[in-house]
Image (cartoon, rainbow, N blue to C red; front, side, top):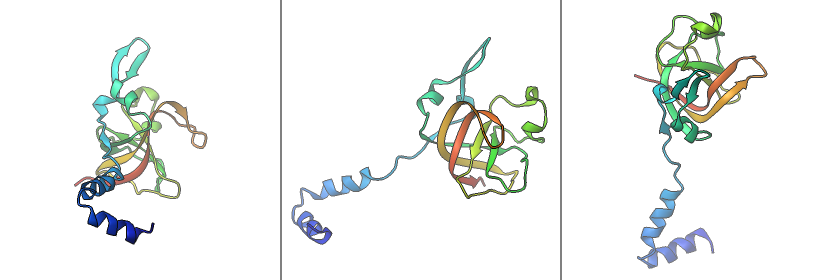
Length: 154
């Protein structure tokens, strides 16, 4: 049966029309969950901060986070560090003791770059957590967002 015939059949049976609308809605992707910096970690123990239940539950899912770009290491960015508050120095240019605990590494899609900005950002992408060392840069991160969309906030 081709598409035109299917639509004709569906149009004749009014009981099927509500189902057709539901099929269209089911195909839409769910809105990403908003994740705040305050929701990254749960309790702090002698071994350090533990990931929150919310962060663990969202592992591998689409999330949206808002924050600021830390001062970058280079003029065109295929990755950057998202922070809760604006920072005056690059977190990697000082000692690890000066790094904020709640930073998120944002990795841009292959072939896409971003210009540095001091404006607030909204980032939507796939959440990944756990200690990872980037083979190319050598940077170690605990929380990463593989960005699909990055936009400036008004």
